[in-house]
Length: 321
Image (tube, rainbow, N blue to C red):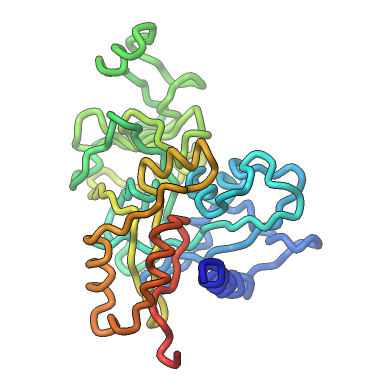
């Protein structure tokens, strides 16, 4: 049941994606290096589709993540047990480029710390752009709640706060634009002092828990976001590692690693401390199922919540079953 449920979903997603995607002579998608946000389409609560990549000798999961609009934790969660640095020629790599939209308002910037991902809803009813993000490590959590973009700055200067200077007394009082600036090339400032969305001079940190509470994007992604987002854009910061949504009349659950599990993925490559199904998550699933609660596949739900692969999985039995 464990492998069958995941395989059925991935086969569905990959066949759907391949309908409009050309392949090279080796069978790899020609658009594999295109950022996911460019081609993503919205159907019900689902943005984009998952894809499969057959690894070649040069591949690492870190490089595949960046070239496909993914973060590091996202790609290793979807490919647990595969060596991230030497996946091996011919290895099937899941590219988790399907995303259920976070529940709540769909306007402006929606930052979901629980999945290490940002969504930008530029126009009502249109598919949002989405980007992987680096988030705060232990002790440096980003606050949750509502704020807005109050200032934009290209080539920003970084002024390390006292808390960071206490951690590293050798830091200068200011770091101007250039390759040593941790803010990268562009920054969007919130109406929360000290918190912002910015680029980075260390792209390997995107999709991981390494920042001091700010939100970092790949250099190419912050340029796109910076040009699109005006001052005054509303911002919602939430923490939803488990998302629930509908696609074509079926309910899906997408479960991402919690912070402890994310750390375990980085150190061990897979999750073993996964025996947890919080009552509030199960309540949310029942609530979203509504009149279709009787069709819920609780075995699929338990497996999805245990594996935490970050891939949307169908958790309702089809009406004909």
